[in-house]
Every structure is written in structure tokens, then in C-alpha cells.
Image (cartoon, rainbow, N blue to C red; front, side, top):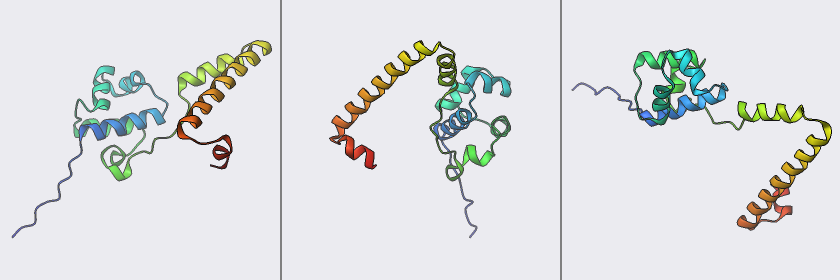
Length: 137
């Protein structure tokens, strides 16, 4: 009796998630990657959402455009790990803040520090932790 071939089923959503993570790690927008792939942004968006599948040819083109292997796009154990990096949009805003006059920059940074501190306090209250607990972690 002949053995059945191993079958690998990869969902469109899984592929889309991996493509999005790889794109974001490269710091690319959907528009920029779509241009590299010679497709519309809406088609790329559909792929990333898992609303549209990809052909083998498209997987190869995606891998080349994203400087990744086809395994990183297709296989869960080779998938990229999401990393917390500032977005291009945030970096542009930070650059604009750096270019402000000293006085304005200090005022804005004090405002941001106060907001972040307030958000951290709210989170600590919700989780029941104290400031001391959060410093230990």
C-alpha cells in the first residue's frame, strides 16, 4: 500500500499575517511594497487580511521584495516574530519635535511624560500592582 503524501495546508490569514509582519519589519508601507510587487495597494491589503490567497509565483515575488525566504512566508516555524519598533510615522513626528525651539520642546516633552505616567498609573490600578511591583518586573 502506497504512503499518502504529507499535505501542508496554510491558511490565507496566516500568510497574510506573515507578509504584514515582514513588511512592517522592513519599515515599508503597503503602497511601497505594492509598487515593488507591481500590484495595487488594495490587492496587497486583501492578501495581508487573508481575504485573498497567493499563487506560488506571488510567494516568490513577495519573498524577493521583502528580502525574506519563501519559508518565512509559508511556514509557521519560520515565521517572523513581531518586534516593537517605532513606526516611520512616529519617527517623523519625533524628528519634528527635535526641530522645535528648546522651550517648546521641553513643554511638549513634559506633557508627554505626564500623559505616559498617567496611563501607567491607570494600568497599575487595573492590575492591582503598585509602583514598587512594576519596578521589580
